Length: 387
Image (tube, rainbow, N blue to C red; front, side):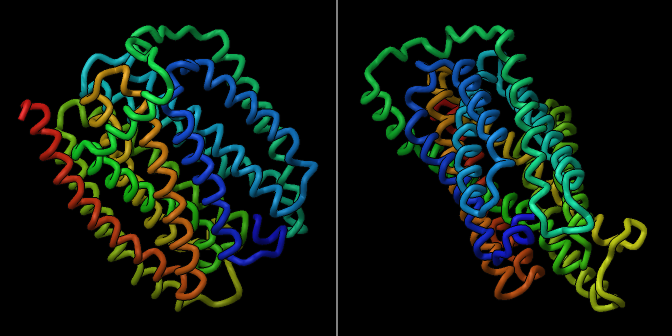
């Protein structure tokens, strides 16, 4: 939508993710040592109120710069909410398995919100003038939803006593604690896992609508709606993982999922190439004309889904509850850097070498992630055994 409305290149659009992700990274870094002092609930209320205000202003701005500032604002709010949400999970769960299960359910509901967004935005597109900025009116609706969330949270109680225990030290000491966490081998390898996963997920999720439009020749509305299959499969995968990981060891599930994800990328791309080569005409404007392979590749989300919530739960449940706020900040910081890196790399590969080559690139982070997960599991087992 941004490409069409403001007549910009893929490389220019690729910097939108860094505006969001670097804002997430900066806010996470600056606020992570203060989050328990601010309070999880209060931080989420601040973020929701700010998001609502920004959304109500957006329809009056019609420029790429305004969109960049929007992404920065949303990224800042997202950092506060995610740090607080991740920290809160430890307050309402009892052990590692329940933590992993709850984290997957939480991420599944987050994914459902992403799915809905793929259908909300097309409702505001002027089909007679695809290059218009009428879609900006969607932000009135999003602002209203943010206000509803604000009011619901305002009347929801949360006992944060355990999180604040022992966190009355000066903020300089809190920063020292954060850097001490960074030199723990288990935390370091976890950071590598989180960085690689988000790099992988965002490289696919951010560019799938463009892939659908440029490679599969779907029109703008269908390209966005079809990308919702990826978000839906991620939500479904995390919901199922919430049950599966109560019974099956997390490392077994994650390695199997990543091997399946790599296989899907490796075998789907040649099929897509053959289907695209057989096209006749300028493009696809109807659901009935969409090739079956367009529905298959987004299912990669089903097998990628359990990875991120599981590794987050493992690292958080292995730390004392007062450190969950600090660790949540580090999770979000390096996840943001991974998402930004993935979007920029994929956008540039897409522009210069094509969409299929860009998605083949995902095989590299999949392979690296498998290696890092094996090391992460070994270090986690040693820590659990007290070695």
